[in-house]
Length: 223
Image (cartoon, rainbow, N blue to C red; front, side, top):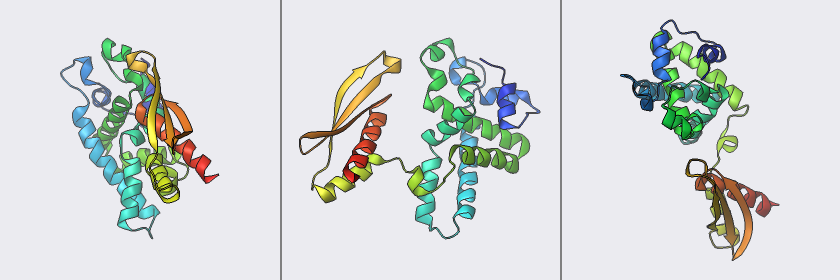
């Protein structure tokens, strides 16, 4: 694990209380008297406010429904995982050897939780403005375009709506293959429409493979 000072440099924020940062980076598997769960709880609430306020100002003509959908696409595990990966946060988390051997440094849940905890720690030490500045800069780096269309990744729903309107049926997802060890499995999913395969894709989870296949199917059906 690298020195957490490299993470501070990426954040462009240097903690006065280093113990607060260490707590934010400590997973419960590390078996210390502290872990990052409380800071994660706080960071989640802080990020919800920051992103909500950011979208409120960015889209003055959008109604509550649109703003809620955009926020929901950003304020979730996959959204925070992208921000954590931008910081290479997996390198700095304190984990048990067992959790590390189980792929903990790349697990979305651990990355997302650590990111929330670090933002919670920054909020505690320096206040909302510091947490806001860091969060918004990261958001803009990871998402050059922030709108509902570019952020929406629910290709399965879009595909279902399209096939129901054009074919009168919903697509059928079937697992073709699952390979690799338990902690690093790869799944291959095929999509059938009217009994024919229209797309297939692989992913690290069934859900990811389904979404990738649905995206391919949408592109094919839309020509």
